[in-house]
Each structure stands twice: as C-alpha cells, then as structure tokens.
Length: 434
Image (cartoon, rainbow, N blue to C red; front, top):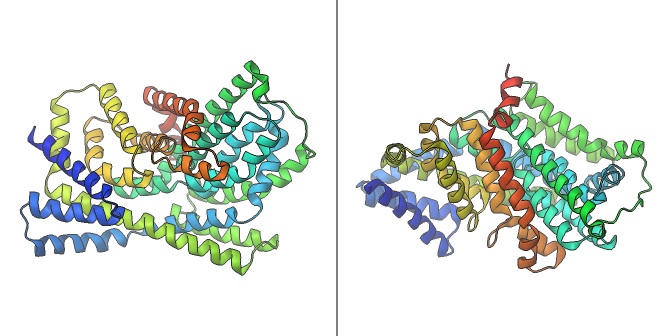
C-alpha cells in the first residue's frame, strides 16, 4: 500500500506543479529532481549528474528527428491549396451516400492525417474549408462541428502519428510496427463516424440535405486528390516496404512536398519561412516534453516505483478486463486536463510495466493509448480539438463539446472493439512483417 501512496504522491505533485502555470517540461524536470532528492535520498549533486546523463541520451535519439520533419510537412500542406483541393476532390464521392458532403469531414481528416501526424493541424486544415461551406448549404451545425471534432483526432492514430513516435521512443518498440498497427483502427473509427452520419441523414433528412451541387466529375476528382495520394504513397510506402525508417520517410515526405509545391508554383519564401517558424516552435515544445519525461521515467526507475507498482497491481489479481477499464478511466481523466503528448510521456513510466506484467502486447497497448488520448482531444476543459473548432466556428466551447458527444461515444465503442478483438490492431503489422 505504501507504493500506491508514493505513486499517488508523485502524480499529485505533477498536477500541483502544472496547476501553478509551470511549463510542462519544466514541471516534469522539477518533479524528477524532487523525487530523487526527497524520496530517493540522493544529494543534489548526484541527482544532477544522473539527470544530465539522461538528458543527453534522450535528446540524442535519432527517432526524434522524425517529429520536426512530419510537423514541417503538415505545415507546408496547411499553407498551400492542397487541402482545399482535397475537399473538392472528395465532394463528388461523398454526395453519393446518405449524409452528403458531411462525409468530407471524416474522410478528409482521415486522408490529411496520413500526411500531417497532428490532430490540431488536421482539425484546423479541414475545418477552415468545411465548416462555413456546410453551414451555407444547410447542414446541421451540431453534426457538422461534432463530426469534425471527432474525425480531427484521427491525426493521432492514422500514421504518421507524432504521439506514436513519442510512445515508440519511450516504450522502445518499433515505430514502423506502431504505424502499421494504427491503420485499421483508424479506418474503423472513420467508418463508424461515417456510418453514424449516414444513419442520422436517413432518419432526419433535414439535418443533411442531399445536394448535387458539385461540378467536379469523378475522373476530375482523382486529379484533385492526386497530390495527397502521392505524398501518402511515398511516405507510408517507403516505411512499409522497408526502404526507409520513419525518420527517413519523414525526410522523403518533406522533400516530396517541397518539390510538389514548387512544380505547382505555390512554394514561396514567405510560405517556407512561416512553416519553418511554426515547426521550430511546435517541435521544441514536443521534444522538450519528451526529454523531460525521460528524466521523470529515470527518477521513477531509481525509486523502483514502476516495478513495485506493477507487482502491487499483479497482487490484486485484477482480470485483464478490469485492468483495461481502470486504465481507460485513468486516461480519460488525464485527458480532461492535459494534452496527448503530456499524457503519454507522464503516464508510461507507471502504466507500461503494469500492462506488460498483465501480458498485453506493447504494440497493441500503444494503439489503445492513442485512442484514449484521442478521447482527451474532444473532452473539455483541455480538449485541443474543441479549442480549434471554437476559434474556427465562433461557437461556445460548451456547444462544441456537446456536438462532439456522439463521436466520443463511437470512439469508446472502437476502444471496446480493439480490446475484445486485438487482431484489429495486430494483424497488419504481423502480416507485413512476415
């Protein structure tokens, strides 16, 4: 029971530090140092030496180079007209199913997620095109906002995913296999969303009026979709074929995006400079949090907290179902207050040993964790997708959160499905790995 109190104390200290308005990375470093000194009994000099070595080792990880490259790729596309062409290319296909162009929210986000790796970027890019257009055409406002809130979170699950890279680095598992594992669950959630939209449209046609307004033919739509499809094939094809690692594939993606923008005469110095500046800010934030989390993980290891806590959980003899329910509740609660990367890096030192002790596959748990993080993206008060949509639509955060409830429930259903049938996650990486 003592180890549980220590774990609760560490978690409480993290929340206390963050509640004071401290930057996340600084708060994690402070908790790591304080844990070693006050709970581990180390003097300040020795604790500093330990953390300085971990700081260098964590910051020198080659896998981290993929993060700024994927962010840069998403920023370049965000500032070009490729995203607008994506919407126009999907429109003639979406008009053929109940719900009409509301489906462009779902599949537009799913496709853009495959080249951005960011939930916020996916939501903002697709949302700036579709929200006003859907409102102008008479589509239900709540259904439009909710579908975008839910589908925007697919940027975390459909590869390349920045959160998956963070998880892979921390859990020391193959990032390529994580990417493969996220494909089918991501498509499953997209189809659940689309099925819900179609069901609502059939039962309440006034919420999604069928309008044949697109002047784009099916053949022309393929031309509009070609740039994004090419980028997806280059990035993901190079990874799945074994030609490139995720970091190398990210470099391939950035180079291909620059060439594509140059060919289409959209590449300018101002576009590149703005993309680069935003990339530096976001990458610094992500990587600093990840390095600070490595310090916290090391501190927890010195305290034997993960091992002892895993042993305590094992002694409770919880069934795998109860353990997953407890972890799901834990992550949803964290999602109320923290962003996805912070949730991942702060929780893994404690939760990963527990799930491995319980016999869960770390690749499967990575996808389960990402789904839990996605849920946090659409739950107030710190749901990033909600804030993005509030800025795009001008609606209150309460209405945006209310609109996202059905899609929150559908994502919970997806989490249940991958828990009951783990093959949904594990089949593709096993198949492609031979």
